[in-house]
Each structure stands twice: as C-alpha cells, then as structure tokens.
Length: 201
Image (cartoon, rainbow, N blue to C red; front, side, top):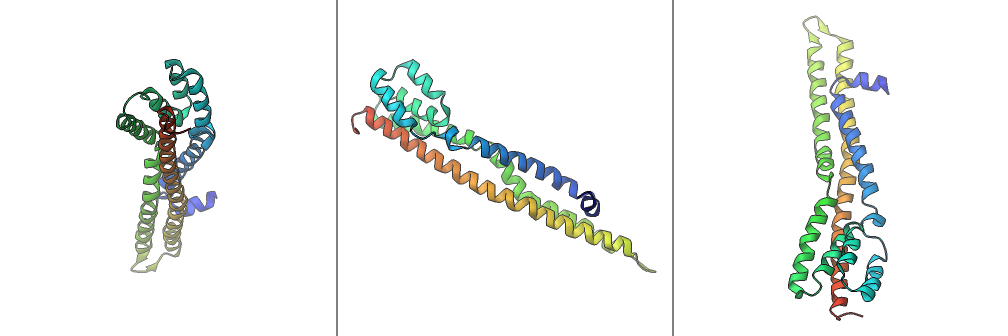
C-alpha cells in the first residue's frame, strides 16, 4: 500500500484525507439513521395507549419528546392536540423541518466529498501529465521521470473514483432514508392527532 502511495505522489494525500472523512461520516450516519433510533416500530401505538390513560399531560409530552426524532414530532402533535387541525398540521410540519435538518447532519459534507473526489483525482492526473511533459528534454526522455508521471496520473484518477463512487452511493441512500423517515413520522403524528380528535379508533 505504501508503495502505491509513493507512486501516486503528493496529490494523493488530499484524497486519502477525504476518504478518511467520508468513511467516518458513512459509519456515523449508518449508526445514527437506524430505524430503532429514528422511528422505533410500535412507538405510536405505545404513545396512543398512554394517551388514553393520562391524556396530553405536560409530563407525558416531555417524556415522548425525549424518545428521538419521531418522539419530537409526536410530542408536537400532542402539545397542540386541542388546536384546530390546520394549526396542528402546521406545527407538525415545522417540527418535521427541524427534525429533517437534524437528520441531514453531515450529508452536505459527504455529498461535497463525492463531488470533489473526481476533481482531486483529475488534479493529480494533471500533475502527472506535467511530469510526463517535463521528462522530455532535447537529449530525449527520462524514463524514470516518465514512469513516475504516468503513475501519478493513473493512480490519482483511480483513487479519486474509488472515493467518489461509494460516497455518492451512500449520500443518495442517506438522503432517501431521511426523506422517507420524515414523511413517515409526519403521517404517524397525523394518525395520533386524528385519534385524539376522535376521527380514528
């Protein structure tokens, strides 16, 4: 591995740094965007069961709000349960936007790495091409410098794509996951409000 890094030259270091950051962000998002953390199964039914017993007591609302992103949205619905439906819907949507922003954490950075990695690889390719042209002299070409220039050009191009492709795949996956969670959580909150208003059983 070290021999490859040496052959790729100094332009490979920004790509290595970007790959480490991308890997850390991917692992963090995989851990943070688990369904059991964001929107646990059966949570709405559990909240409904408690609501039947205690109503929308402040202590109950606070407890629900502490149970992750879905809990925050459900707590908003409970806090406004006696308001008109348009007011409840608007408050749920506002909380949903805040929750969505929190779930989007680090995704912009991951998307930036996915977009910039090929450009960093291209930069390494240009550096390698400069070295290739620099190996040409009036007396002929320097084979060692020529080979090094080719190595720099090809290794940086390849490594740029190796970093960019997984980063873009995970960025798209996380974006779709967050969007799906937000829509699902808002629907669950509306279900809770409908039940509280007697429109569902």
